[in-house]
Length: 326
Image (tube, rainbow, N blue to C red; front, side, top):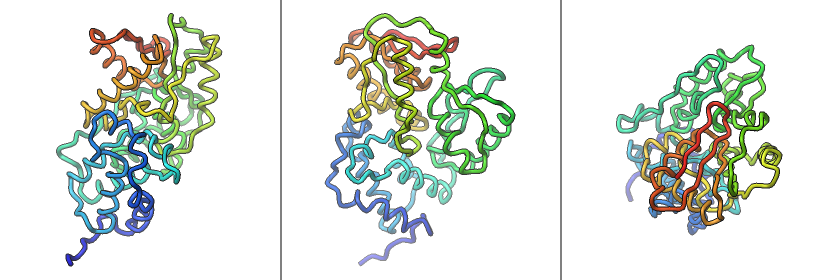
């Protein structure tokens, strides 16, 4: 019998192994829920496959390598698998922890581009990714901590922060305090702030795509804030929009970084499924609250407009509005 390798997860190996226990003996029951696997057709990217691979690394049955780290990056952390799991296994959090430990062990991955962190203009809303969330998702905790603490220092003294993307808002709210970078300010989405100013209501049947960051891109429980988002939309529109629910396959559009950069074909296929889901429901205008999702969906909608029924992706972000006809 071959000797097991030393786990690169060190003292964290037992906890990661324990986190994968339920997955290791599961017959892939969350397969239907994963938008990545549904879009690509590759079961090697299913939550069960990624958690099993993580378990093998934790137990020393598989060597740590750049290939393993890249394989674990085939997850957007949308949380659909956790929603479908009767045990509510925290897949996204476990995979993120594994990527973090592999990054520390292996160093930078020369074949994977480090997520770019956008510059922040004075007085403008904070752009998507500026909180450093793409670095956190990639597992580069050293770079994330540096970016986050610098951002928190810049924002100290401000009473209100506008975020173009929900992922950044949740990152600042939930992750910054964990690294002693808490920001004492009111955190507001640009899109919701814009709706309070009553921007023009799009014509046609309106649908709403909830940000999957509200649940599990950061592996958090479903937040009560989602109810306030829907209430704000109803108040703005004057009626309840059609809702693309969390429990439907395909509600993650694939815009999350670094997944979008490293898996562009899969990200496009995921966006196409979201748009088709909306078309099947008779939706003409799809309201999206996060800028990165709106931009990604609008790009795909525009690229496919000649083959499908037109659908508009609408981000109510005031002067930073993103619209596209597809």
